[in-house]
Image 1 (cartoon, rainbow over the protein chains, first blue to last red):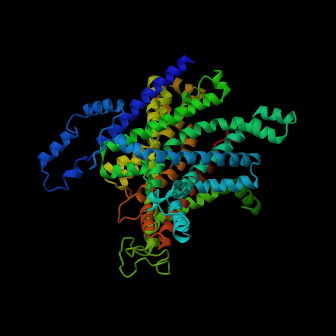
Image 2 (image 1 turned 120 degrees about the vertical axis):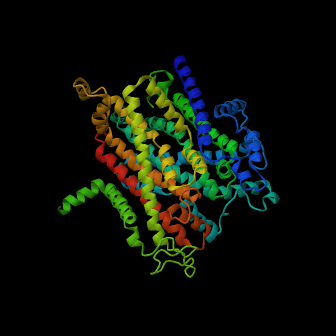
Amino acid sequence: MLRRILRKILWIGIVFIGITLVGFFVIHLAPGSPTDLQTTMNPLADAQAQERLAAFYGLDKPLYEQYALWLKRLVQLDFGNSMGSDSRPVTEKIAERLPLTLWINAATMLLTLLLSVPIGVCAARKRGGVFDKITTLIVFLGFALPGFWLSLLLMVQFSIELQWLPLSGLVSLDYASLSLPEKALDIARHLLLPIFVSTFGSLAGMSRFMRASMLDVLRSDFILTARAKGLPERLVLFRHALANALLPLITILGLSVPGLIGGSVILEYIFSLPGMGQLFYNAVMARDYPLIMGNLVLGAVLTLAGNLLADFAYGLADPRIRSGLLLDGKREEG
Amino acid sequence: MSGKKLRYLFAAHGLLILGIFLVSGMALAAFLAPWLAGCDPLRIDQNAILLSPSLVHPLGTDSLGRDVWARMLYGARVSLQVGLVSVGISVSIGTSVGLIAGWFRGLIDECLMRFVDIMLCFPAFFLILAVIAFLEPSLFNIMAVIGLTSWMGTARLVRAETLSLREREFIQAARLSGAGTVRILLRHILPNAAAPVLVSATLGVAGAILTESGLSFLGIGVQYPNPSWGNILIEGKETLGVAWWLSLFPGLAILFAVLGYNLLGEGLRDLLDRRSP
């Protein structure tokens, strides 16, 4: 057990260093400099000014030295200052944007879980039945439907035609004058469509996976035993089969983190939501190196955390892993 | 073929057939674009701004009076090109990494697979967006970046196949008869691992088409005036509630293209995978 934990910690360390390396070098090896935007547009800026600016940001040092400096500050949770006109610390900028993105993604995950489990179980119970066929069709449509297009269609329908929901943004113009419950309602109305779109996107994969997992379990011998000893179908399905079929779902939930975080860019762009995705998009557009790297590394670290959390939860949920019967966990085969 | 046989074929592989139909439809549209379009997709006509669909302009015109039908057809070329080329890149990298890791095992395997772990930690869209923004957002760069950020699944797949194949008797026989490593990998292992790779490549095309349209929609994919389904949708967003044809048709096109490749991939999986029930 101790060996396993040590291995895991080593793995985390290696992956983390790798994340920072890839993130840093991808950005810095790309052509174009972050000072271009401030200098080439400005007729007063000559070559000397450009050099001074590069020196100010430390861009004149060799790449490995820049990386070492950056990593040193990173360990102290200092991502540097934004290159934007406000020059605020990157951590501060991200900290005010991150919660919204996390809330949207958490709500999405919860809804996806609540919907995909019953859908998957029902579809697997009567394989090839009407419900199975209909959900299969919807799943394929869900896989293929571009989220940004679905958003546009819903915006036209509910915000422009029917005027039930606000078009975009997080709060209305008169937000400051509202009472607390009204404020909550206002935000909820703004987030309804984004969360719906996001959930619809991940529902397809998850319910498909739940169905496959359930079908897999239903084939095993202990289900045959349970049926043979005359247990009612309800108990077989929900007590015996579901408990086992849910286990792999934990891993998939962990694996869905990067997709959700990456997807938040387009989602927040369309709905003008002030989350991490929008921050990242703006940073990319402004070539704000420290901010881009901060976001990139944080996105990857969140994914890493999601995977670890899933691994941990899997260990807690599966008594076979807890007691060490299945020593090689999910990760080793990867 | 008799009616009974045909019915059986459709019952067993209906989704696969639908997939083939959609995929070939898209390919036809892309190849025949110059002949089907009827007019230049870049031609600006100030007398035909934001016209709704009619006989002259079957899918209407955009805010510069360009024919949407023609732009859609040329957009199919972009999507198809991005899908095939980026998957070509990702499959080549993934297969090479998987073969090498699975064959040599040990330290090489460990290093390569940890690199795969690292790459998988990045939200792909973040990575693509960051790189594209620093490069020129050209078609070639988009294809290269999508390819370079999506090979990890194939690598894991090929590695697993290689690990199990390398212990088989026919590989030992090939070794004994003096075949070199490269020959064994390419002639004996690769063909036997081809089926799952083909499936994941087909599904990969669907993913690449979606990614490209997303990038173009954000304005950092295919650049104006060149048409792509994603950047027609930008105009759809700007004319939301005014010109429904600008958001409906490109979206449908993306939907059907992605659906087609997904159905084809899943259908191939059912056909090729003898282990699945």
